[in-house]
Image (cartoon, rainbow, N blue to C red):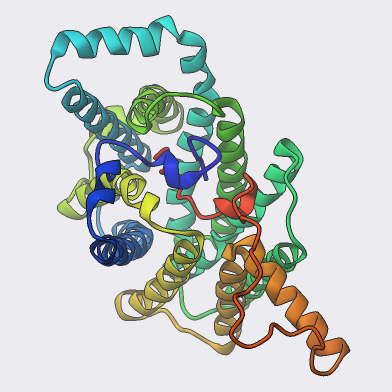
Length: 397
């Protein structure tokens, strides 16, 4: 997923970021406030991850007129761009002249930086449309599990394009991830319960794989071209929104232009569809704010919880059947997500503990009682382990 810089935690800092003045508070107060923010961040990440997928699945399987997915993608881009414009307007304290001068400098004068965003914006627009295709043809729980392949694609593109290294535990977790997704897809191909006649699991699988590939490439490409960029998260999202709206309209005209012209842009829109559009537009922006308070383990835990929540909700809402094969595959994916999210220092500790447990008896170099543990090297080395779970909406697309 896309990140503004090499660290997703700082990338999301914007108008809502906690100021340095918080250091004046008592340590206990700061610690308690930070814990509350972490729990709030966990709740936001879980709800946003699960609710968007469930709401899209719900609106795409309702009987009656079906809305055009391309129009929903365009509307989400428009609303997101307008929201970012309002946030930038607030940053300029309501001074229209300052805002216009700022946008002229950032968008037009520095046009090279703006044009750099055209490629990831094109890919993200394609990805958003592919998600509608995938969720329309796959159960929400199956999609949620399979979509975790984006971790694998992001890792591979980071190794190839950014020359990053992964620990052995991370490579093992990626293998577990692939195995888990393969088992879930085997269960889906084998039946996995009744499904509507208008759904094509093969098309759904192809769409989700293409979406994961585009997500991984766009996120890493975005990080590569914008490393060291000074633009705020709201400015970058506004620029992406401008390109996304134009490209989304082009895709709408190419794929469904005749039908939209005949039936209308908002054909099939219901309150539930508007809920999906608002979730896409504002949910990702909200995640961009709270993700700075969530460490990697918390993000991995949020991903795991969202898989469980999507599965439970799918049972209640869509009559989804969980059989042992799906449970095994989903369990492998959840375990892989957790292992991959571990900081590099913790991963090394687990690997060394397993090695010593399998090759010898009690360790002869144990830490003496009462002695502090030796200092650990920082796990933040600018590698993929520091940011594997940034939603694609930290630059919200």
